[in-house]
Amino acid sequence: MKGLKPYATFDDLRRHQVEGRDFKVIQRQGQSSTLVMAIHGGGIEPGTDLIATAIAGIRHSLYCFVGTRAADNAALHIASERFEEPRALQAVGRARAVVSIHGCRDEAAWVVVGGKDLALKQRITAALQQAGFRVPNPPPSALAGIHPRNICNRGRCAAGVQLEISQGLRQHLTGAAQRAGSRQMLQRFTAAIEKELM
Image 1 (cartoon, one colour):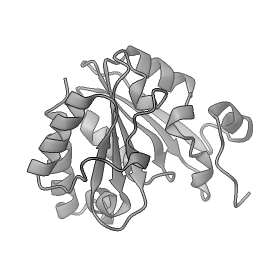
Image 2 (image 1 turned 180 degrees about the vertical axis):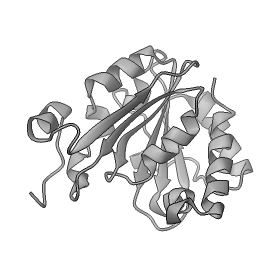
Image 3 (image 1 turned 90 degrees about the vertical axis):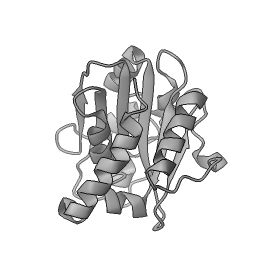
Image 4 (image 1 turned 45 degrees about the vertical axis):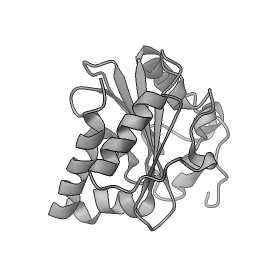
């Protein structure tokens, strides 16, 4: 089954992939009105579910779609504008603010802050920059996350935030079996974001 093309929709994916074998959903309800998501977790965009879980902590709600295939997890990548896994849509519908964590390929260490929530986007951008992280601003158009059907923009306010974290930064944040340097950097990264969330 190597070389599978990415599925266009979740309905298509679940006709061919088995929950518990090929993917799993991690979900937790928090006390705040904010939902932190990683819809390309596990082997799809490695590290994104770990980062989302760290940001959510125990205060915010969490949703992660995690690829667990032995190989070829890229086939489980459904575009943010077409991601309609039912539990994800229910979680987003309950949330006032949505922060969606994604990964992109680049060995350099940077994070792009996109989405339609301009105020929250500006606050998170400033907080990350103050914490010492490289944040290209304005974000490249391909990573802007402003499509109205993007999962981050489907909460109650119809405007959320999307973080595209480069492969290089994800490796620093979650790599090498969470050595001390990675743990400290992850704590600094998540603290910068979490303090801006409701």
